[in-house]
Length: 352
Image 1 (cartoon, rainbow, N blue to C red):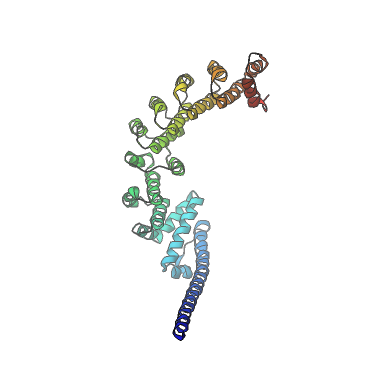
Image 2 (image 1 turned 30 degrees about the horizontal axis):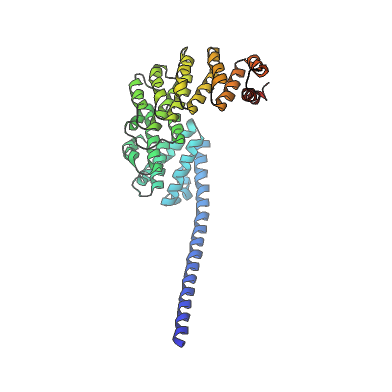
């Protein structure tokens, strides 16, 4: 009995000791974090003053910045300095941007950014690529290109953006072999970095429009819309038979942006063979175009479509094309079905 009590006491004492050790560790860590936050706050003030002096007063007398010189010997300070330069570069333009890049080069921060590319943690690698891209370190491109096939989306997306940021349209060569999905956000980033399309690029664009990666095709369609590349019109029409409904929807939007005299006629001919999502996109395109050559088609859809939602939207399109009188005649016609009358009234209740 005494042995059991002694054993329980020892177990309790051991657990109590473990709890105390854990509490001490938490307290020590909290103190460390607090001191670090105070230190970082002081560093931030030093860095902000440095950046302000260079941008506003064009003064960078390093010998007078004793606090900065001493702090710059610390790797954590240099990393914070690098982060603040990148953040500042995104907010400013013109001569001030050049001064930020001059600071980056003067204090050899490209070395710190390049070191991150050899790290194992994905967020550090992505951060390094982002910093080198923001500071336009062209010499780093061969190293950055190695990460195009990295398993982490965080990393390979930054590498993709870097190539396009440095080279524009010519930096899209990785689209030939890319297997991963280009997210909508990534597509917007890439589009914002492409400022012009070189001449004789139709062959490349056509190849990417035939990609087995649907996100590549969708990105190309958005690129075509942005620059209104009329020369690829016939290539785009071929995509109305694409296996992906999403691609077809983007195709309708792109053809509308490249609109010529035959576009609406083409939409009407293609309409019967399209899934409902694409049919709605075609109706939206017709409404946007305001082309009254579509009136016979629209009236036929209103009267004969088996989809109530199509009838409702078609009624709205007809109203937008000035066919209010036609719609009111259908409502008053005794031969009109109760369902059709309700649909038209529902579609126009706020418009008439």
